[in-house]
Length: 381
Image (cartoon, rainbow, N blue to C red; front, side, top):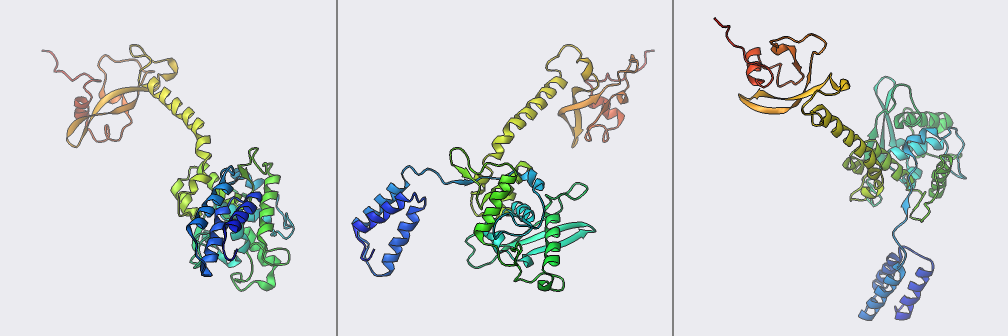
């Protein structure tokens, strides 16, 4: 490539295109920077050839392959045990999958994490809380780092999918498996968080193979039919993002937990909102139907059906800040089982609104709800 020529740039672009490199522009830009550092000029003709090579390599490649997520709610179904699932993989692999999914980590972050980065506390007796010290992002060259924490997600008895109990189980296992490498109260920095059977650092490829094996155990297809998704080392990051989004966590909270500095989190939670739309539509339609039914829109001039007699809606007024304002449609329970009186009493109907009954005396209630109850008249002489 020295000195840079048109034939050399064309040959490099043809090689990258034959290998179907998706990041061909990165390699061509690195070649351009490398020749500039050695004092060679980058002429206009070379720049035009460079742009032609980039366009040729990117033509027909399609979008980037996305990481396919594992079912977040079924992580507890993974089999336990100490044996690794892949050659050179971590011991207690289920804990690695669960912790990596809850903290939205990449495979390189799990394989290179130290056991001292996992901090376990007990706010209440028997209720653990885990704090994981992680790099701020994949471009964290200064190693500033950040920390994220999760509490116990169990409802009653402990479950394997709880991140706090998984961290508690893993630290207990490391203490029993490597007692000679454990210090007084905390593990040493040299001990990996997810070590191999020999206690060494797990390789990145072995951690990715462990994630792929977990997908096979859960019955997840390793790739989509069109090739746009596949299970990879970033699958745990997508698993946690989609699982938390399905549980109702806001997108900005997932962005903070995943340490994203851009809108890339939307690509991870891309399908969850679409999956929730039919359910939200059904719930919203049901609520709208009940509202119209209770308010008498379907039966404006006659009584509601028998099943709805216990709850009617009437429009009333209440006193707020010294003036009469039209209130919302309140839920009023009628005493239908008792015989009707000729002169209904104001307290015979109970309005469950904190701004209406508790603050108004009976006389004010008569004035405020004149549409419902007749005003008291003086006895005739």
